[in-house]
Image (tube, rainbow, N blue to C red):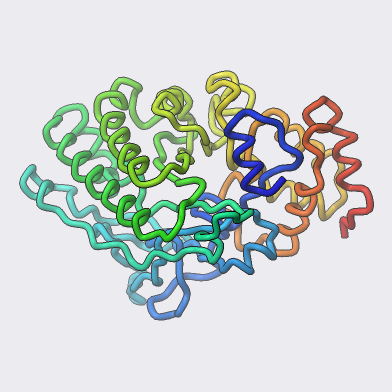
Amino acid sequence: MTPRERLAALLAGQPTDRLLIDVGTSTLTARRPHCRPASGDGRRYADAVMHLPLLADEELAALGSQTRRCGPSFAGADIDPEDDVFADRDGVRWIWADGEPAPTAHPLGQAGFKEIVRSQREVLPQIVTPSCLDQANRELVVVADVPSPGLLDTAFRLRGYYELLEDMTEQWPIANALFDQSADAIARDYEVMLRALHGEPDLVVYGDDLAFQSDSYISEERFSFFLRPRMSRIFSVIRSVTSADILFHSCGAALPILRKVVEMGVRVVNFEATASGMDLATVRRALGPNVVFHGVLDFVALATAMREGDRSGILQAANSIVAGWPMIAAPSDNLPASLGSADIRRVTAFLERLDIPTLLHGDQRHAVEMAMDGFATA
């Protein structure tokens, strides 16, 4: 089976021969930057804040990824060398500290209704596509990356975390205006990106961190009132331009809300399996057998186990595949810069060799032994 055939089988609830492997491709599976980005450094990034480096098709192939990316290509931020501060497309100001950005100022933090509805977002930069996108008989899976943070993320960035939560409690007109502006900007970005493509992607990523490690940021009731109608509109815009399935991401303990997202027709979900109540078995029971999981493998732990020849650690990864099936094999977080390409390739080479029918029929140990047979761990 080709990677695209495997994706089609997963979505149809049909058996597959091997795993579909996604690594280094989108903002969900990308490698973290080795150093602080800089304007004019010539590098291109998958997003304007985290600065996750874009990998060329040949780099993705060298990692063993069976997916390719299309989406915006951002230049490095113009970071002030004196205070490490930069601004994004919405005017949110960030500080680059300890290898990561953190927001320091929100453009609509004190804004009234009129200022909110007049706010503008900069246009998207160039949209880049893989060479295989327009090939009707291509074998690789093409993932359309996020052109924008999600609805709650965007509103938090524009207004501020505590300010937005207070608005949802005490100032509904302000909260509604913020979410309307955010939804309009996000929908416009997706439409611009997808209409710029000269071919049809297979998956479209939508990411919105709805929760933290132990709980959701908002209740199910507030999600249904403030977010669901607008999120549904964004999804409708995406579906009006492409037939690709939506790959939905949220960090944190988001299971109650994730159920509602799946009710909106989402078929592929990426979530944080280490958050409270988000273990694979619990999420699988809650979402049912037809939702495809993505991004639930600990690549760092598996790379360490592969390097050290730790069969118990490798078997643990195999057990995660069984617990999460049906699934796309992808890392559970952005890959740290310290994880070398050779380690990543060792992991994907092992995953390529796993016989899925054997694994799913209860003989995980035998499936691992077959995949490891003759495989160099050094």
